[in-house]
Length: 304
Image (tube, rainbow, N blue to C red):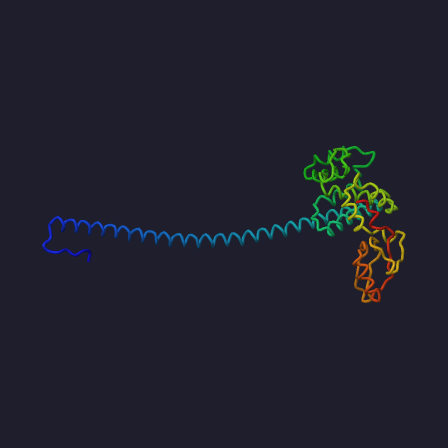
């Protein structure tokens, strides 16, 4: 029912009422059509969204699998390249035992430093270490011909760049004038490690002292300090002191592991003693198995 009309009623009023009723009916029908159209579009949109979400989920899973596969392949490739470098070091070392031993020591000390510092070293650094030992392209009497030739060979440019960076001095007085942190970190590390292992073949204590005297000038002071603390293979042959727990001082460096009576390691060799460590040792002195061997070089001697 749309509207009541009261008799007597004029024809004009009747016609007007009919026209108004028809217009309202037309608008209602149009609204209903729009409502149905919107409902259909919403349903279609919901289906599209569901399909899109499913597609995104499937592709996300696929991307994750692909990424994981790439990570595994990269890890495998890195291990293979490292293995190849170590194999080359071993093979070439058969022809020159001394250089073979030095190449392995150089590479192992760099890797050990990287692990201690949580660094992800590049694939090129073991090859750069090997070339530094066997070819010595940055020796005093050498020119850069070898490095320029190496840089021109496809795939070897990063290795040449790493070795060239190792020629630079930390204070900017090197061949290219690169200074401080402008020198790539791995090049700064290679410079210190190579000089440490190659400067004095039979006496790395001399190399250690030279590096300490040349920090800030030739070497990055932070890397030099950390490298010498982690690369403690020479401490076993260096002159050391047997020190009682009561006479320990902050900054003393351990020559050997400190073990408890159950053979567990309390502090590893190469540890620079801190006051808290000394206090802990004094508390558990009855449980300490070994005598405490100290390398007689205090941390204050590091000019950093």
